[in-house]
Amino acid sequence: MAAAASLLLLLTAGCSGTREENERMTLSVFAASSLTDVMPDLVEVFQGAHPDVDVAVTFAGSQVLRFQIEQGASADVFASANEAHMRALEDAGHVLRSRALAATDLVVVVPLANGAAIERFDQLAQATRIVVGTPFVPIGAYADTVLSKASAVLGEDFAADVRDRIASMESNVRLVRAKVELGEADAALVYRTDAMNSDRVGLVPIPDAFNVQAQFWVGVTMSSPRGDEAGRFLDFLSSPPAREIFRAHGFRSAGS
Image 1 (cartoon, rainbow, N blue to C red):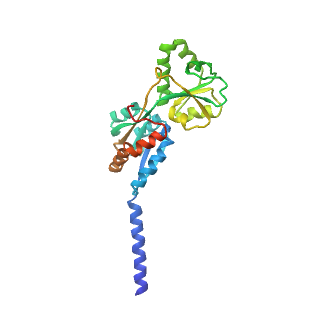
Image 2 (cartoon, rainbow, N blue to C red):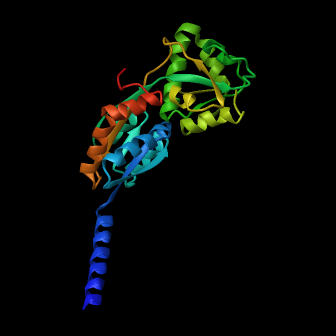
Image 3 (tube, rainbow, N blue to C red):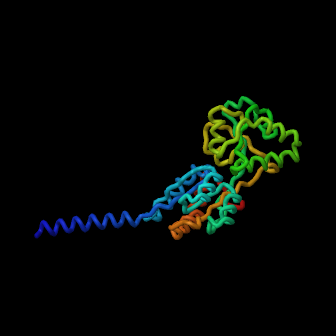
């Protein structure tokens, strides 16, 4: 009888453990490549406060993630490196609600050896090989805006010379930066936050008159079966602890 009771206790305990495991849920987050460094720290703090939720993050270019969501990929939260991709998903009924997440600006990165001797933005045309993002990825669109604004002050020849020296266009900002890190480019335009998180590149500032404020956006997908948890994660990303983590990684508050 005692043995039977002990066996029943073990089975009950085993069933209880299984039930607790089944009650845990995984939140799927699609995030822009430029959030690769900051997002793990954000997830760690969120999971510490919400032990019933696991957060799985997929990183890629914002345009790639947008396409995957449009094609039915399972994602609960989407974090974009610009507002345009978020608005497109909202207009098509794929995102329920969104908000500005964080901001940064652009810089030029050069190899540490800096063979092209680029020390100021107006020397960018000294480079033989420049790398930018494709026009469809946020960093590419932002870089194009920078060059257009610069041409109004430095002349159309400056922007034309820089564009003539573009050796490749990459599908996300990490690939853009990698070309410089590997010595395959003389210069590239990336987010300041990506430059700060690499010890293999030098940073050349872009004058405020030419620069842009890159605004990151985050939203809950319409198809998410975990809307409540996705909303909790969205609220967390705007909380003081999250803003402090963003600041530690070089981001500014949205709109600043």
